[in-house]
Length: 104
Image 1 (tube, rainbow, N blue to C red):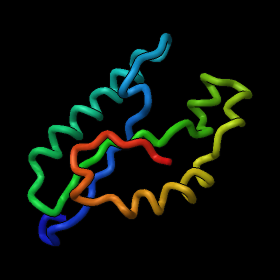
Image 2 (cartoon, one colour):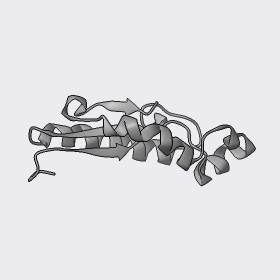
Image 3 (tube, helix red, strand yellow):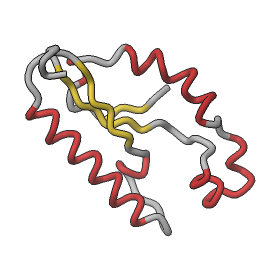
Image 4 (spheres, rainbow, N blue to C red):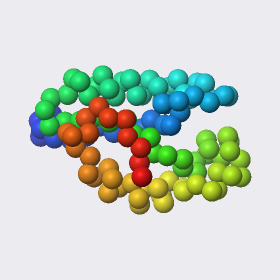
């Protein structure tokens, strides 16, 4: 990316990386770390590159099922999420450097 002079590092964060909730403190802590790491990296990148922290929204994963139980089925599975998120991700660029974003 540096040799090419373009590219975007997308670090997956979470809504819980920007807030807190009971009984998920370790998860919140790690996602807060992702947010801080991304903001620091963004300040170090050369022109043309970007780093963003992305909250993908709520996705029906094994972790969600373990926390939400059956209600996790009310949210998109990863493949369905990806179909919507790809165009959003493809449009990220230097203008987004350092931002904490949420996928549509």
